[in-house]
Image (tube, rainbow, N blue to C red; front, side):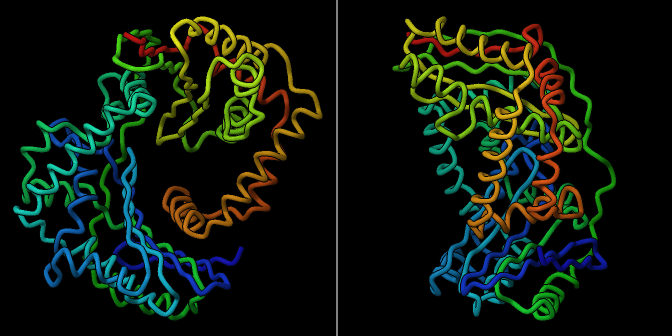
Length: 408
């Protein structure tokens, strides 16, 4: 993989991957998310993602939204528990237009109070919409259960009560305290000359004053397995079970990713999809999710089913987890699991926007990017004995937590 990198004097890093395409993608990734909020700031990181488009020193909302749309491009942003990203897709000749706009909204937004109040209503609608989707809500509620009492457990959206109190000065304070220049990465994927990319990035980002991170996030979290049932007004019963898991730096991370993909990944032939849906017809949506974070991680399995099939479904899930704890995968099973994961990763990288975000995140977290060949080699090195050890650690029945939304 052809990669060019540069670090500016203020700590902001640049990474560029040239590709032969008339479409380019660039983004600013910031190693800050909802995990970095104080209790009174709950929802602030996501709120900033919304209002960052609402006006700068030289642009109003309409001009921001039209700047890329007018040339057929797209402007977007997202927030997670540990990162914030603003990014754009565009025709290659409009690279500077996109880069300058990302710089403007990230560093020169003015957050007009009138716009803040309007956007609070939009986010409250988003919160209410989210509550109407139990299959998504239960995942956040499960992390709140697993990370009880820690910022990691709070959902990203915040609450209407907290949102109501946010003002311009609160936003600016959060950004000063958390938008650290040495935790920012500008990522560019497209058919642009590396010297031009560096020159334009330097033009807009080199003059920014340094604001370096002075302390690390706390990494140690207390975990105690819990089991909670809630009666909900839903058409199905929804269930999540899982455990804390390996963090971003763990050598076992790829092994758990492989196991998660095998048991409930996107493939229609995942073990749980075959057992619950294809063989027994008792669940429609089944998935296994592994999310590594700084200093911790979480693994969970979700499924929705009729109340009458809930206990039967749980027995099937436990049976599949027990199989992985008690018996090593055979050579052919391991080969097929590895081949499937490698194929999924390779196909995902064909989406150039996803590739840009993936490269940027890897560089932000690890200060390097593995090529596909290097990633494949790491996956190929996973042994059946490694997976057996991981399964016994993460799928230990005594360490599993449960959250169930039961039909009312």
